[in-house]
Length: 528
Image 1 (tube, rainbow, N blue to C red):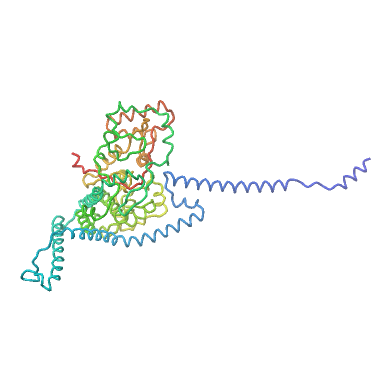
Image 2: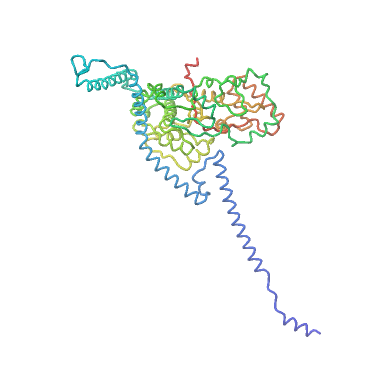
């Protein structure tokens, strides 16, 4: 019996061991896991970069490594093309500005020639009267008409030169104040001359308004980029409008930063007397209103090229560059029109420049180099453009910069958009106090409460405050800048919401509105 069993054992083939197959399969799985983990890390990093671009964070050049290769190549090509275009446009900007001024003045001359009184009957070519049969009469009459308008214009130019005498020493700060004041008068003149038709047009079509060079489309008044501020309104407590009628204003009161559901304050400080310019016209009739300011402005710009602000004190330098930036942005809109996107606006800010002290300074250079402003977190697209295209800083121009960053410039620099702060004139002696006033006045004018008792604040203010105040303390921080009655009312609304809606945020953020609009605040002396 044992023999067959032994034969059977010798005849059977050995079974293969499963270990090598299992080891190979495990190794393959480990490699797949590593590959998937690496892909997940790359996707997570890419998601963080894109989320940061859409949120508050600026995308740096180091983050570019996480973008796909074709996206990197596309962005690099765009940067190269933008740089080339910017260099070409910077060479044209001074000529373009001059051409614009000359064209406006030519239109003004043509308009005035049609309204000149008849020229004198006596002609310098004759000693006696000009008879109807005189063969030289037509020629002399033409010469007389030509000489007469020239004499009138020369007399006006001499008179203007007396009013704006070029001094042996031009105060840079006084000049910057005059430039802002002059450009403000131009904007208001071009707007006032057609304000009635502007109101009618806005009533008929809320989605289109004229720009300085034509029509351009605008975004809706309210966007839903931050929907989280809406959902909790439904169950929020109502505001007693009758009880708070001494704090809240009626619907007809001017509210420069009106937003959906926002109730206006009865007292908004200096912004209540602001001049609003949301569109302009540059026809012959409108140029007649702005004629004197246009002539003054051209002379001021010529003087600007001769001054050197390098020896100014830090406060004087700060006031000088604030005024120049605001004036340059307004000048750029007059010369080029209103851009349709942040990319076009950034291109405009790079090519619009003034020559000061022998150097050319663009609006972008003034804002982000001279004044050391951080990329705007309330405008992520602009922050992304700044990260992708660095502004070159020549060594000889670093000496024009202010000593240290000034966060309150957020409330002084205006890029001509609906959510931008108002424009006012800053002085060398009081610029720090004036910046404090600008912060207070902007907060009083821009914040409010909803009908459900929720505090509403603009995105530019929320982003500014996040550097030193958390969201829980944000309403309290705002209250410090409000009049006593308004501060008490806000504290009451915040406290009521916390009791009735536990765990919800006590304020909402109003998105940044990029429609064209300027607010001109009254001079400090005019409020007294």
